[in-house]
Length: 190
Image (cartoon, rainbow, N blue to C red; front, side, top):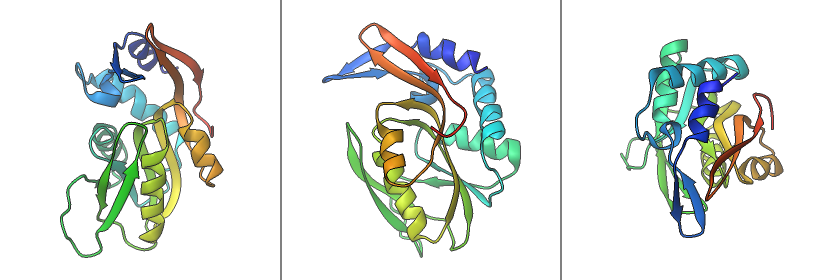
């Protein structure tokens, strides 16, 4: 299961960013290309493991967009993209996010009180972005039915659990100078 995803991760090049071994991958970076068979494998797996009794799919700009769009097309569930740009629409919620390697603001629109949502993203590493958007969704009055990340790296999933959230991931990885190592295959609560 998830053979294309695992193979592509093992082949991912490593880019050193300070002390951080950053892997470059189609799911997390859109580079070198996002292949339809890989997206289809990922989305088919999300459909198998996620609670999709929801009104909306929620994802974060930029690298959650291709996953969220494909999932929306497969399921006919509308997609809400948390954006990096402020639009000043009524009800817009500003989200402050801090990760292990960046900080900034995101903007949530399109969520109404009572909306049942599933959150999908490419990777959870520190958990900073996920914590921020889950808090914003709660502030908007949404009911988060499920949280799905394709790739789990670092302590982010544990941070989410410590804050009362459950997350489902597909593969757990580590990355060092020699490459990406798959250390677990999930598909259930981590």
